[in-house]
Each structure stands twice: as C-alpha cells, then as structure tokens.
Length: 256
Image 1 (cartoon, one colour):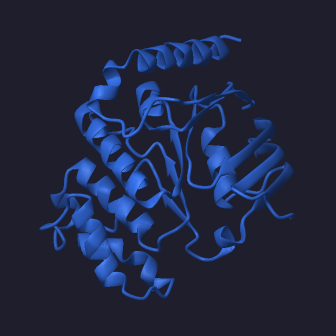
Image 2 (cartoon, helix red, strand yellow; image 1 turned 180 degrees about the horizontal axis):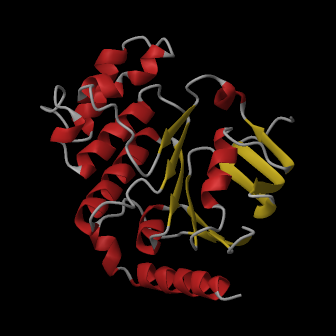
C-alpha cells in the first residue's frame, strides 16, 4: 500500500471483483480507477446490479478486490474512521434512540459520546425522541437515527448505500436536504450509492456513472450547480440539463 496524493482520501487502481456463486463466476467490477477527494460529496449511480454496492464495500474494507489495489489515508484505517449507512436502518429494536446511536461506543472508546449523541439527535430533528424505540418511529426517523450512529465517531469518510431508497418521495427529499446540511457543516467526505437521478444531481460534487455488470466507470460528471442547493435547485435549467444527460447515460449503458 502506498501513500495517497495530497488532497486525496482514497485511491483505487484497476480494481476488479469477481464473485463465485452456485459454481459459476460473476464479474461484478472491471478495472475501476477512482480517486476520492478529501471533503467531496461523491455519488455512484447506475442500473441495478452494476456493482455500486460492491465498490462501496471495497472502499469500506469489507471486501478485498480480486484484482487491483486500494490506497487510503492513514485515518481511514483507524477504528471508527469510516461510518456506514445502509438502505435499512438496522436498529436494535430493544434499544432507545439514544442507546442505538451510542452503539459504536461499545466497541470504541469515545470521550463525550453521550453529549455528542444528543447533539446529533438534536441536529437531525429527533430532539424529544431520545427515549423512543424504533417501532415508535417512522421510516425516515429511523434512518436519521442510523445517520447519527454513523456520525458518532466523527469519521472522515461516510459511506451510504441507498439509505433513502425505501422511503416515500417527500421524506426522501427532506432527508436529502438534511444530508446536504450535515455535509456542508462537517465537510466530511461522503460516498452515496443511489438509483435516483434527481438525488444524484442535487447532492453530488461529482457523479460517477457505472455500466451494467461488469461495472465499469462510464463517465465522471463534475457537478457545477451552485451550493447551497435546495428546493430552488430543481428549477435551475442546469439541474434539468444534468438530469437529462445522466438519464441518457444510464439508459444508454443499460441497453449496451
């Protein structure tokens, strides 16, 4: 493993990954090269099964690439250096909101964890629900708890695997705006996997378009929409232009 360049948090070179299932080999990723910039909001988008989640797991260190290499800054190798939010909140049903947020402290010693947890709960609009249990919360509220939990250790890198995919459109839009606020305040590096084109254009600094399996990078779009972005952004002609282009790329690659 070599040191990453200044301003780069993580670098993938020629990364490929193959699964073996039911006696056959499936190529999930093929020769992916990608540098993740410190402090950016990166979005991975593409058709279902294109390897987005596999790539996210490799970045997280949950999977080793079959081929290629991954270099990361030292802070990511420390325990608690990477926060992760999944499509399902994966909350412990017998624990309150506060105690779910505090789960990482049972593995990692975190000074001032309770105060930090309460601050995150307040900042995500969950104040007053500290003692509530998951079954008493809406889906959107449960996902806010999952985001708080992922942020508790103050990780430099936050990975999100379609965290809002199961939510209704209005809740999803509200959480998109909340996520943007969190990113604007913390300037953490965020990698978001999504199928939702509007979500990708609203949130991403860069949008990585992936081909169907085996997943390759088709295009990396530099998103020049001004920040902060909000409801007004949807009316920006540039938003429509980027959305149309992205749809054409995904539909085009989906029929190759």
